[in-house]
Image (cartoon, rainbow, N blue to C red):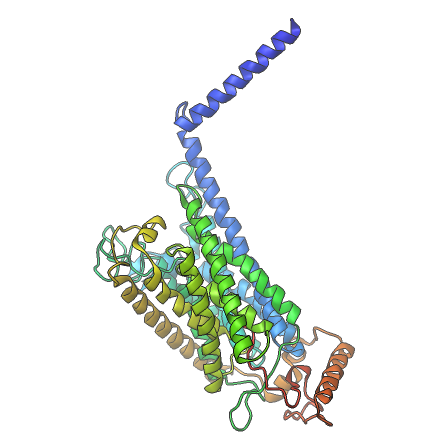
Length: 524
């Protein structure tokens, strides 16, 4: 009898549990609010997790850049990456977020919510609505990425104080203005262009147009960093001994390929937070979009890697891992704008073309004697522009609607979308280059932007930080090993280094006689 009673009680509990579940799914029993609150919580958690993944990309940038520079500059480049995140946090909190997402002023810049004053406990108007904390956190991680890209372009010869000033300007003003254009209420935005209850997206100014489609930031993030870095590299000038007297590039290799490879893999991992997280949630069907974005992102990265590898094998004659790593990043940058509005085979083409664009842009800068140690412009600037243009080429109206863009139209099918994307490329390039150029010129005229030739020769670790990443014995051993490799290639003596403060060339600058200089370097 006791056993029967226990079974009946268990059966009643099971029935009650099933009834509660049915009521929750059908909205009965007062559970609609509970379900809505759970959806909001899931969306908040998604943004926090993806924001943390994007911030973890700083570790990838740090490893990649540290491996790509000389051993005497490792601490300096690591320090800059840490400072980028810190400077971006305070500047984007106080000013940048307000300029980016505040109420629009003529479609140009936001004006409001400085110091995130509108985000506070209970800011959500409806019960269970988000207060907005996670939105700032996610966008801060993006701001830090835009600043870090520049560090690769100006590596190994820039004053630390000058770089920190630039980092503050780009995260406070230069980058937020572009964010407002593309993702806020700015004139390029697909999300409420020009503000108000009657958005006016380019080109038609009504529901027949989408505005610029840049889902996760090929233009808004990567072009800003890439073009800013290009201007910085031009104004600061090349590293000593980067070009010979005839203007031909001379190899200055990175010191640690392992760090470069691991850094790139970390960046690839973080990119899923970058792209998939740009759904800004999982509820209401957004999870499907995130899944699709993960697929197109993966295909483009793989296509970029394999295409760049084939290019290096065909034109350089070797399987150069630095080119393969750059190919991964080129494919990722290229797909970032269009990852939600293209099909998988489109992503394949986007990644393949991005590899050619990176390779060509890198070689072009060398011909122009522009020293970009991490190929930041070739990868982020040129491939970022390609990402925006590829959106106009490969997007379909069906995919745009599937991705949740607000207007239903045929802008992709009739070619208007490409025109909008082209306008976006020109505007972002012009703004980023001009504002960054002005910033670097002001810094150069006031506090100076470049270290002395002696400091550059000794390495920024010793002069700027008073320490070295490696012991003196290890550095000497590495230099000795490099000299032995140099002699083994057919030379009987070491060519003297042009810097007066070094008795012999540093490990990163030794090039075996008879071997064409490898001028292809890994990018951030």
